[in-house]
Length: 157
Image (tube, rainbow, N blue to C red; front, side, top):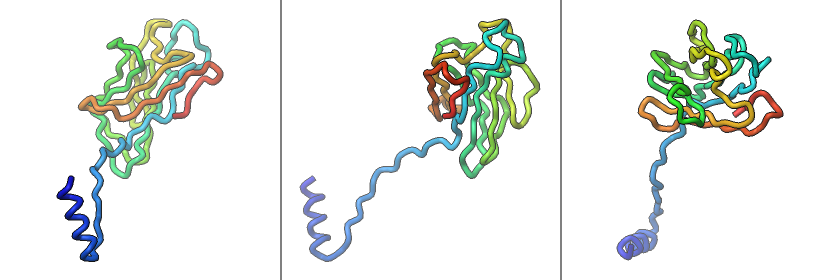
């Protein structure tokens, strides 16, 4: 520390500017959870596919480059392995969104399906409070969004 102080004093005495470089911090992920629709229309019901697909999370690439989501995961706060959605081969283009619906359907460039069925236990998002976690393929957190309300059926993150 004393050497740094002496060096700084010498540089200042010589009339030179001192530039302090801060350590680089990891940039936030450009892929963000933007909405969770946790109380699908008509739920609770018997967990029919239309109701399950009314429950979803929207993920947006806010960056300027496409992001390969292969191996990324979306999950809720439970520790249950069946509450983890794993992206397969999928690229989210810059500025675009993808909706991950709980039920079954045909995957497209804008909508992915968790593939769940089997009644009321098939729902992922709790109707009063929960947290969505998005992790990259290496398991590093990319984003999360929590809600704690039964007054609205969705949360804008």
